[in-house]
Amino acid sequence: MIGIQEYKVFSAHNYEQIPQLIKQLTKDQLWAIKVVGTVLPFKVNNYVIDQLINWDNVPDDPIFILTFPQKEMLKEEHYNLVDQALKNNIPQLELKKIVNLVRATLNPNPAGQQDHNVPVMDGQRLHGVQHKYDQTLLFFPSHGQTCHAYCTFCFRWPQFIGDKNQKFAQNETDDVIKYLKRHPKITDVLLTGGDPMTMNASRLRAYIEPFLSPELEHVQTIRIGTKALSFWPYKFVNDKDSEELLDLFRQITEAGKHLAFMAHLNHPAELKTEVVRQAIKNIKDTGAEIRTQSPIMHHINDKACVWRDLWNTQVQLGLIPYYMFLARDTGAQHYFSVPLVKAWHIFKEAYRQVSGIARTVRGPSMSAHPGKVEIVGPATINGEEVLTLNFIQGRNSDWIKRPFFAEYDEKATWLDDLKPAFGKKRFFFETELIDDVKLN
Image (tube, rainbow, N blue to C red; front, side, top):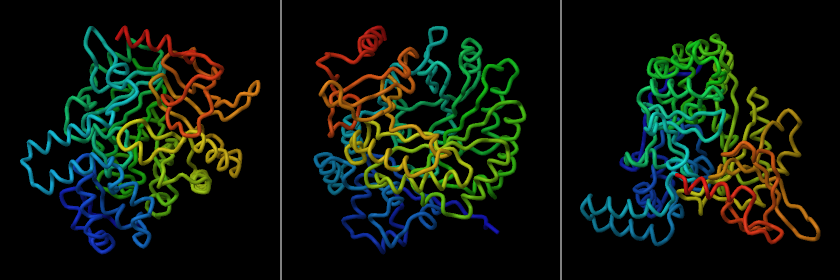
């Protein structure tokens, strides 16, 4: 029987209370956690500490790197700036100014999230909502804008630093419902964050039930983006409101909606515990489907064997591999990013080692400003070595599945690093994208 767990959280303020950490790390390594954790969000809980991290392998353990700040996540000049500020014990107001200067260099909210993804209704921007692709609306419920633990590579790190100007959040659903009624092309509502699965069941119900209204028949799928399967699977097993939460999932499916549980799973180690396997069973028993996605990250999962094992384990447990992403151009991208060509080779090598039932996965893909761009692979055309790319999703749906070509570049880690092949000045979508930026 899986025992009930007391929930304990550690952050940059109390991480030195973790016995395994004190035993395993040097004083300099412990100090680095404080420095980096002053700039980028840091939170971890006792489940991750006690059951996921292999402390015999720390500091190289992938789950440790996934959850504990690493010194190299800050560039040297930024690290030294914050390091000296903390050692000199400067006033909090001055420290905050330094930290904000460093954060401003890390490209918060990339890919047009604030400027081009937020919809306008009746002359007002709908804060806490993003509508980038025709069929899918992203909803950021205000009570779900935290996580059970923070991933060190999180591209939504600005959600957690206490800056209201950088945060997406919506407390009420009334305007969202009104917007949905006016946009019948929207078939999917994605609750995201943060992590909606940090809310209690009654709070989550208050957000979700309006989407089940007969007036929103065109909304066919409720998606929930979450890392809770990895970071707190007790949520779906024996927390005090687990049954109420699972009943809500049943309510969604019985209302005729497809419930897509979008699980962020970065490494096979996250699927090894008895409680996560029970959580998966409980969720699937409600009629929900669990789809899985992860970025490919240096230091964590940039080996083909890791992805092969991850996809195979997921399929074994009844999960659907969905996406391999690339490290977004924000936060500590310089530390975590894998070059596009290398990521493609890793994907290809892992893909060929799994059966067709695991080949539902797509990627490697960049969620860039114009859309989700897939790395199709290298090619040679008329004697020129190029990189073939393709839109899985686009701001303009006419771009989808249109192949385009970039000069072959083994060092490029993001779309903006690539140059058009065959002597062209721009990629086919760039003119329209530039005009769109000018209009906004």
